[in-house]
Amino acid sequence: MTLTTETAAQPTQVVRAPRVTRVSALAALQHSLMMAWRGLLTFRHSPQLLYDAILLPIVGPVLFGSIFGTAIAGSMEAYLPIMIPGVLVQIVLTSSVATGVQLSEDIHSGVFDRFVAMPIARSAPVAGALLAGMVRYLIAAITVVIVGFCMGYRPEHTAGFLAGAVLVVFATTAISWLFAFIGATVARPAAVQGMCMLVLTFLGFASNALVPEESMPTWMQHVSNVNPVSYLVSAVRELAAHGTVGADACWSLVASVVVVAVFAPLTVRTLRSR
Image (cartoon, rainbow, N blue to C red; front, side, top):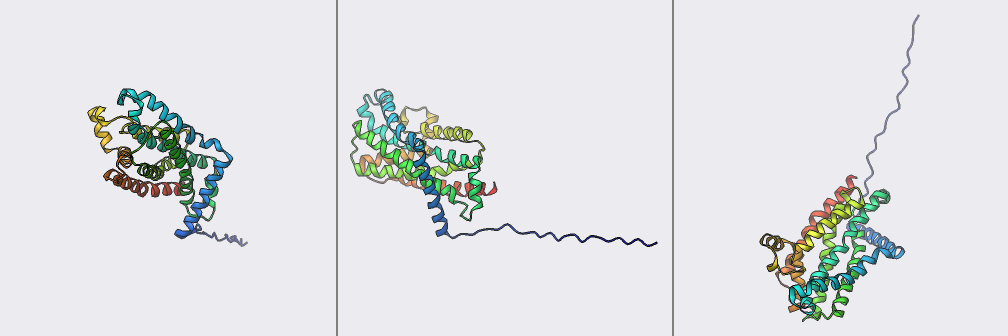
């Protein structure tokens, strides 16, 4: 008796390579602007997201001027040329923390997964969020300028001071890539906000933004001398007092370019690996 064993034909498994959508630089820019428009619509539907960019620039100068004015310069009027440029940098930088928190919330809620499934540039969601964040920085900077003039601040060169405010917005947009990297790396939005505020507190207070470097301990003076925020504050003060672009402004621009060159690829690579 012969037994015949028939082997069922196994189906051939087809392995497909993942589809990769390559976009041009112009298309990536268009996608980023589209995502920026989404961020602006978020501000429109949730205006409370702009409260810190409006209220903090009002409360900050009044509090710092009332607390440190007499102790450092003898009066609040004498303290204004030191305080207003420093507060301008600090408050606009504080507004940039929301970029990392918003990116972490998009990842945690699954919105970013939808963006990944779309045929758009991988950098578009982050770049769009940063472009929309510039609106927050502009609002914060304009509010600080208005409050400073209301408090009696009169720079020697008004045009130079306004140019310094534009420099602050540009540098803050660059530093936002650092907070975006933290938002892409840390899982929880609350943890992202805590880490961003830790970095921001060190950069803001270990600088010459509110007090002269001569009044700091020796080791703190060395920290302030290498702090990029100190260069940015000094650049704004020089523009407001003399209307000239000095070495501090140049170093601020170089530091901004370096931050973007380092953290923009790291952020996009981290999001791509997710």
